[in-house]
Length: 226
Image (cartoon, rainbow, N blue to C red):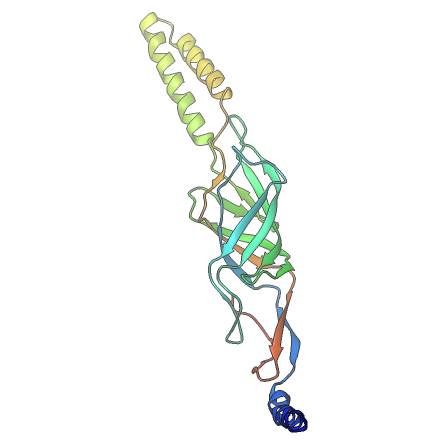
């Protein structure tokens, strides 16, 4: 028994240098500066036809964010946000518009961090643009199509009026009938399909925490690639 106990003590003492050689884990804070751009793709279709103000949405980071040659936000991370403003297209004039605000970023390992960023650009949708300093998305205008249709109605009415001997009356009737018909219908809805690229720019730095060991080569965080 004594020999076995002695052997256990010796084995325990022999393992001490190995345990001591393992550097303790420490919490590293990585600061991604304001101005960094996150290139994302919409995870689900968003449209003024079906969505409402307050609805949540998500976008997936398409390109990793690098900081001093090190990946700090991987592709596949998720931006989560909600629609803070929604306006359906009007009749004759006006366009559909919405504001897509992001609230947090979720990394693939499950960690989440608060996020403050503004939408700068959107790519992949015709006649959709981002305007203003708060990232308002505006959809296609139906004004041109409305005027074209009213013009066609006026022309048709004029032709009928000429046949009947009252061209002015015919033009007025054609324009009025077409205008009333267009007033019954709204303009084109603003639709941002799944996969549309949205580029968000950080307005405040993101503070990410990372559990690192002393053996890791930690370089100071100066700036992130845009």
